[in-house]
Image (cartoon, rainbow, N blue to C red; front, side, top):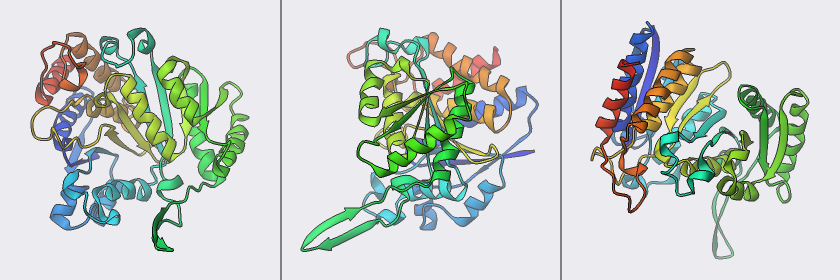
Length: 360
């Protein structure tokens, strides 16, 4: 029996987790998989009950599991806490402690949502790109870091640092993914001003020689941000560091229609993964049945495909999501401002996806 650890977290995390678990359970039954679900706390929920954003016991539990499914962490309730003990520290720690160095964030436009983007439909139709983000290094983890007062002035400082092994392993993930897709990798950097990006350029070029069947391009991060809006279909796989990947993957999500549609996988060596929607905790709508569970459900598809080796189940989940949207069902985030369209809640959206699975 395979253990799946559920970390609902904060805000809308518990709401979308209910729907994601129901979908995973349904697919597991269809395909004869025996799963054991164990639920634990992370983020603000863990702070409230245990005084820390992630306990050692939870990390150990995750290590012994097949995969982890996470909801969201954070919220204004904990914003005044010291940075080192805020909910987000739990997320950063679990990534580091479990060696989850490769973050995969697909951004695909489902045909029924081509008109949900703020961009023109003819610009977004056919978008199918993947952001491969290095997740355990860079400016979020580099030392030295901190706050100080010098000459009567407050200052803050962080360090962006990578070594060549960190760059090489995430680059290989990107090239391997490109081989499964359209065979093109874009390395996103700021080598015109950053020494660390110059190292990335060198190492990415070296790794590229191992993949003569994959085309490589280098793109400055500022121009890449512009091109994602102007011509997003030009991209297949983008590989970049922690900071740039954090920003660009959210931009890619928004041009596809909504952050509520973007799943992600954070992978360690050997296939172990943590799967989570990208949308965050959205505390302003928490507990009101307004959340969009589709990103969490699509994260289940990635879990099935990668950690449970069930690509057929993943295909069924994605097909059910697409048919649910094609039938016109929308949560509020999928409706453009001023558009008159009936919306449904988180639970109803989950029920429609489950119904689609049962009819598959």
